[in-house]
Length: 102
Image (cartoon, rainbow, N blue to C red; front, side, top):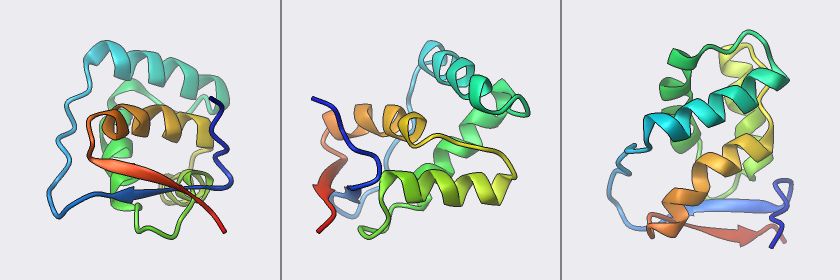
């Protein structure tokens, strides 16, 4: 199922912090994909970026809005698909849900 980043709003479930326990291999794959969009990204910047993706979830911003906001904050171009790639494992573990923008 294709998820539309422009119309998908991630929402945190519960009041707990989401552990950022993605494997190094996962972050390496994400880094390589992000590097294709903006050559200024380095591998060690992926961890703070990942934390910011979570910080920008407020139940109102779409996945693309989060990509734009975090990209603006860090001065880099981030694709909504890359934010989605990061969020999906957290959704599968039950830490967040996706709603469609109305």
